[in-house]
Each structure stands twice: as structure tokens, then as C-alpha cells.
Image (cartoon, rainbow, N blue to C red; front, side, top):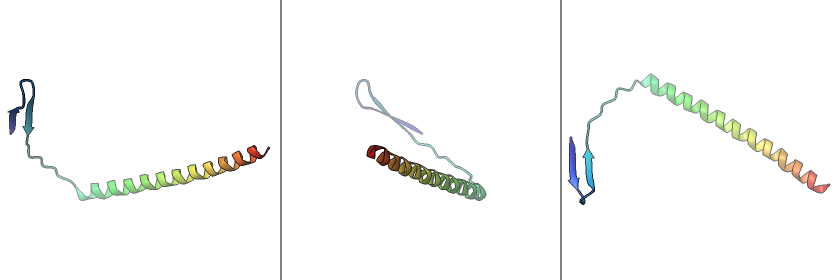
Length: 67
């Protein structure tokens, strides 16, 4: 169902309402959760690797500044 409301000479408000139904299978949700967990773990490992590389660079910078 769509409703229209004139706001001004050039503006209108359009309100659309609709009923949507979706069928979701539990095994899909479980698989998606597991996949997201894997992605999160991968990102956390990637962050840890970047932090380690950064620490090495900071150490290198300190050593170079001593020269």
C-alpha cells in the first residue's frame, strides 16, 4: 500500500508499506555464524601480525636514530 502526501508545490512524501516474508534455514545461519567466526579469527591474527611488524619497525627506527 502506498500513501502520498503533498508537502509543498514541489515536494511529496511517499510512504510505502509492504509485508515481506523470508524463510531461513537454521543450518544456513549456523554455517554463516561459523564463517563469520573464521573471518574474525583471521582478522585478529592479521592485526596481531601487523602489530608485531610495527613493533619491529619501531625498534629499527630507534636503532637508526642512535646512529
